[in-house]
Image 1 (tube, rainbow, N blue to C red):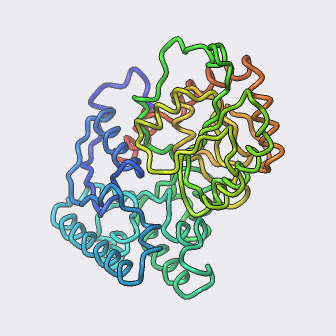
Image 2 (image 1 turned 90 degrees about the vertical axis):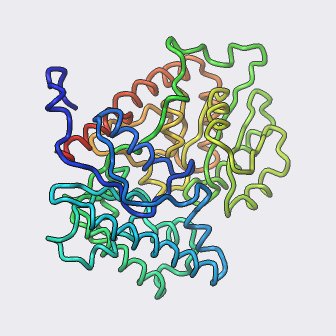
Length: 393
């Protein structure tokens, strides 16, 4: 970050930023929208819009689960939109401009990859989610990862990512994964925080007392996430069953997904659980966060679960909430360890950690205070703006 003695002229980037591609812009994928907002607010840089926005309810994994005809139509639409954006970008780009290509960057970058480098705009792309990982690692929606479709998609996405001058991911572990899996040179990869809007999550200063000081004495434990293997929701359900008879605890689950049926069977009308099994607006999630005493993270174990730091943990940190998550997790480069309770991703360990933290007001207070400072100092807008200032200069 720049020092206080730096003049405004030195801080203002010297290159234009062009927004390109057919981007996910809805509430479920806020990174691109918040990145553009932060660049504008922190750096005073507007963008030249050369792209388009996908509908707010669009999800690539849902497209993969659609019928063959719907999948073909959806992919054709993505290619057509990105082709149009590529033509606009090539017409408007100047020699020193930088193009920002949000998720999903595969389609536009693949098209640009066929243009010689000297005629191609300099591109910075989002790769905190890759399409290949989404289909074949996270959800197993596209069949076996050794199949023909997997190999074709991996080759296309590898080519696309290598066409970018800089590939932006969310954690150092994810950067290593992208370098190894997709063949992107490691120096081109930057692991920076996800771009969030913490305006509705930041608690008052000074912070409120823990909720267990209120009359009911109930500790509210919150989980927000998609019910997929990465999140470890079946392990969470098993831990909650172990705590079924603890009247001092109340659990709120928010989300749905392919593992929801298994979770539903495991819980079997657990009286301690309230499950919002539907799409939930950010405003509603913020309300649930304010009522939470403990927030649960990721418990998927090895693989991608050990490489991520999901949006929900950014929200919990910004809101000043104590967190329990698995001991293996990812972080942006140069970021210190999380102020959280770290556990083995198994039901007995998680159940014990929940009970122990619920009974310790002092530990929850300490974690809450550290969480707010951690988000401000390491994951907030100033950190993201500092990286973009360097790239744009």
